Length: 78
Image (cartoon, rainbow, N blue to C red; front, side, top):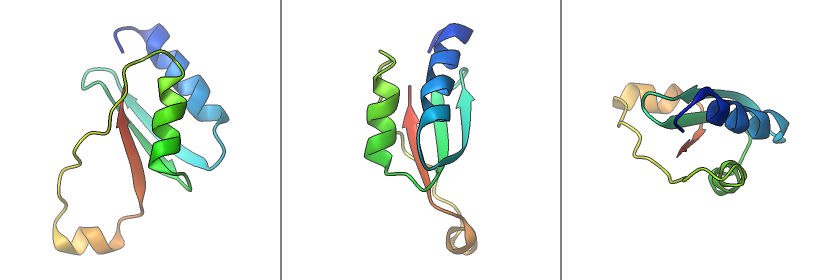
């Protein structure tokens, strides 16, 4: 993603995706974080339909106490 138009395209497809509860698009880090009842592969495929390069990114390892209470998330870079 290199501009607000790219961000808008990603937001449009995620906004229409069933099961997506929340998403965060970070243009500086070139990352999109999606939360909801969705499969990570489905999120990756949906975002890739915008024509943007997509791949999963390594999530920082949370402390053990945080890992138990944190809801599942699907993350992809666009």
